[in-house]
Image (cartoon, rainbow, N blue to C red; front, side, top):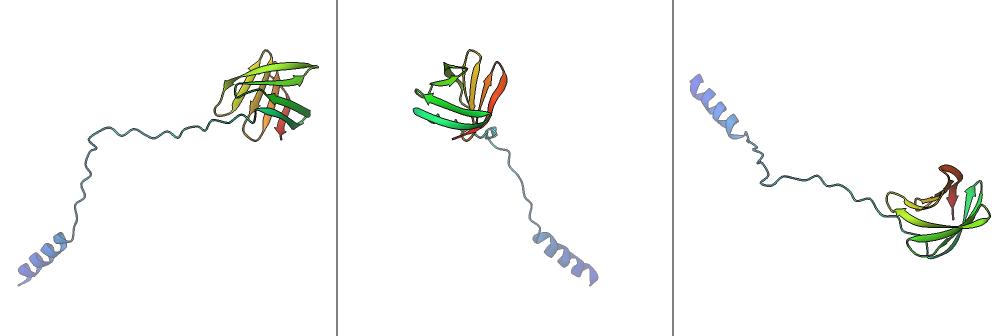
Length: 117
């Protein structure tokens, strides 16, 4: 009498088990790399930035070139990188714009920082 009851309980227990089988994907799955947004040039036009260390006026000529006045002369810079920050360079001068803050470097040394419109 005990044996049929055990068999019945075992059959009931096994019927409630679910076997999950994970299938191999037919094609390799490539991880998704989020795209870095490209920072847009604020121009064209002339913008005055208030910075730690002074004020800087930047004239964005187009999306690839700008002119700024520093060291008692106009400096012409061209875009060299758009992501993750917008970077303009010309000679010893570099203007880096994050979309909300900018930094001017001369000869690799930061001369104006935390620049904002």
